[in-house]
Image 1 (spheres, rainbow, N blue to C red):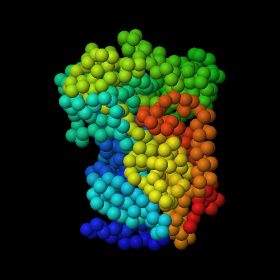
Image 2: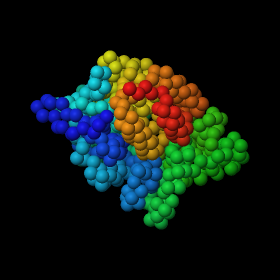
Image 3: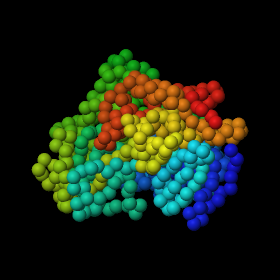
Image 4: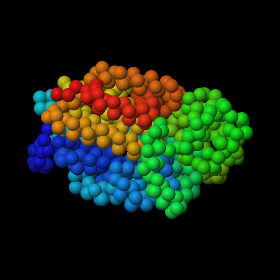
Length: 541
């Protein structure tokens, strides 16, 4: 495999590059930077008009990261780590998008990214061992390798509610928010859903709206973010300790330094346990799940943490009936724990109404609002906070065809199957960054992205050095990995409830726990062993 000239398509001609990367979020940007530095020619296609991926699209009120900003950043450049200044404990969307643009400008990435261009198809030619990639702008590109950096949470889910297109007012989806923002002043607003984007946006919408109706099917656990401006002295201390902090994080299951208490919740007194829960609640954020080592391993330990949060909800929400509706009954942590600012307190406002649709779903959307149990709720705007077709949606919306022209959607008809969440048997020279079967959404995404990008880059360098041009996961290796992913999913409580981790939010989607729950360190070790054993599980031609 040799680096080739970047020939632009003219009048329908085919452009030839070494690698096509789909998506210009953090994964696509780093993949471009890494491969370009190795001498490969790369073309990146991005649907949006700018970089940032999920942080480009998700501009809803209150959008911010749930990983502390000092840990949610690239590690590949020590200078970048030292130079960039985060301002808040949990970075808001505009600041993360600014960071993405800073990275793109610092490393001159935008010149190789084709914006406002959606990849529609990628077909593999067995004769040439190359992929043909086509776009909605008429591009036709021949590439030796294709890297899908499409993101785990990028294919928004619009529910199939009867009459959804009949509504005469304005409609919005939190995953595709207008870039100019939205002012809900003096409006009656409906928010459908109570997942992370709703939990972040509802308090802000409630402050603007004349009246806010929140339509809830399933309540979620959320803990206070305790967001605040970052103390300059704290930032200096972290930057001085960055290598050690990053090293510690990589030894932990989520790739985040959660300051996990290694004791069992069942092995301490009730007084001590309550003190620890209170301390974590006051500290805020997802480190709450690090209160004790066994919260996701033992149902009895988990119930103790769940009851603590339910008691907090009852203490905050004044109406006992509303408090009960907001109190989840399932395992805490089986869905990704949300973090919020004044979410539960918002339901004490006189202009906020919680509508339970768990037993009586929304019947239909009418021209003037929503109908539930025969009652009409008239509103001026509807916000669909209904999440994403996670992990597989963005991939399956592209016509991807491997050996024999087999569509990926056919191979994944009963659920995603991959080797390491990186490659797919029957689809040579195709890589998926943080794909199903990898730790991805159960971890700090930035370190997971970097690990995948670096593995792919090293793999392509290896193939080039060996004069090989085709690499494909074997069926046996894929089957073994899928079995392992399924096996470890049963070890913890995380796979015990209906969540987007198992595709439960998408009608008809196979119910399979998609991410690898065995932890970041174990996964990294497996990837390293595969390489050390001569790319074990791969056929190289």
